[in-house]
Image (cartoon, rainbow, N blue to C red; front, top):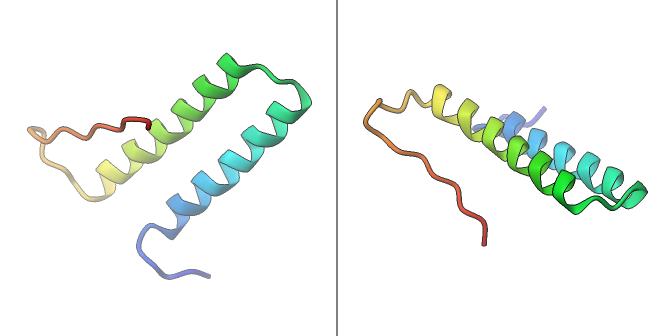
Length: 65
């Protein structure tokens, strides 16, 4: 077991991205891949913000690039 902070979230991203890549290779639907990847990252960020108890006035933004 990995005891580093947020190791489970890192693993969630890793396994989620692997599943998305597999699905994409089976049926290359770009818009579906991108929307599911965005949902994966959004979910991880939402969980992260909950765990660190960000104040309501704090803005967490993720941008691609």
